[in-house]
Length: 266
Length: 336
Image (cartoon, rainbow over all chains, first blue to last red; front, side, top):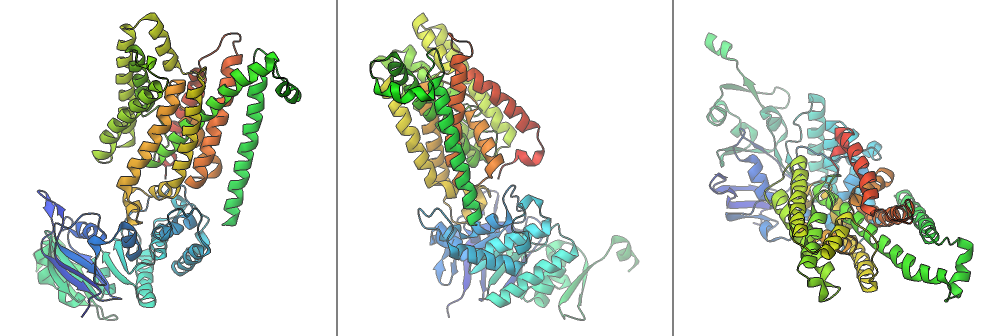
């Protein structure tokens, strides 16, 4: 059986300082997978390893059977799109920015965008709801709008795998839910596979099909939200007392934090 | 989208018209006044003094102004793209100083007697070495802040100028004068071969730069994100550094240190037409050419019959623009 995405005995990082060890997991096509774990547990390092920014120290990762490390940069950019946490792009319009997603498809001496490039950018601006903003400058947008433009740009790359680094950080709940609903919808509509770093355990549990919980450069636990988000594992990894329940509407796990004062009463 | 391209074309046409106007102004002003109406008559009469003035003095000087202005301005635009910072340019990064030091070494040790190509070669080498130092200190060591990068440039300039002071203090009066000429900057170059080299290599640099227009655009997102878009940033940044130092080295070796062209012109171009490198590259070159033609015309006429070093004029205008850029809001400080 040919797995869509498979990472095997993978290790990468900064030898002597911090490295990931024995990373093994698989993702099915169309899955929405969340990576959770405390600060410094290696989430971002894992992302850099998958996107090829850091080279593998051992093991390998395969997308559609092809080794990612052996792809050319261009090929990689056609298969993997990354949306980073902060999109600091100054005086560039949203449309210009989204069109940058076509760079991996540009021929050697191609100087102008083709009609196809523009049509694809238009399509994804429409899907992410930023069409109305297309002539605005990126630095004039709110954080949520910038994040949407970032997703539109990534989709314009027409990737097989979308990597999102905390798409909801610094956003209010309206925008958090808006963005995650959008990603969920896109993943279902386009059959897009999504791997997302996310801090908020409740959002992770609500939206993701499966979760990878990281600790000290290793995968502590992987599985469905219900399998991963239980008080024992969360306490072990985060060193924090929590209570877990089930969301009465969605049936997904919910994590409650408990204050020191309340704990003393128990 | 076609609207954008139309705007670009109009902008280029406007620049070409400005270039033509400044060419006419430059050719007609000076000790011997030549009006536009006289031109056809003069060009048909090869024995007149005016013909000699035009073909032997003003046209070569004009070509030099175009090549040096274009090269310095384009070099500035490229470096700003690499560093994502509107304040870097050959002069502020100390590259011009390094090139001038290379030229000074060639003069003091008498290498220029061997061939006229020696000075451009030494200028080029000086620029490359300085760029390498700046590159190593700023990029290899991992994203230094804008301020420390500019400081490195200023310090490199100081070191280069101290070394030049040293060379000047041990050199003969003849050599001393040649070195002073490089430090002040001047387009008073009579060697036709050097002018040709400068002209062709600046045009070559312009063509080379166009191969990187899209890469420079992707770099506006930052090095990491450009890499996510499939750009081999390591290799292309090195190549871009090479093009920038080629342009600077050539310009400095024929005209000495002319500061701030690479700062003023790309800045104005960005203000008017935006930050897309497909238009910035060409229009920076044209704008630099226009700026230097006009500056040179002022330099050689304002205290006539004497001549002002052109670096004085570009330095004056450029220094002011530098201060204005610096004191503007923070969001403009970062360039994407």
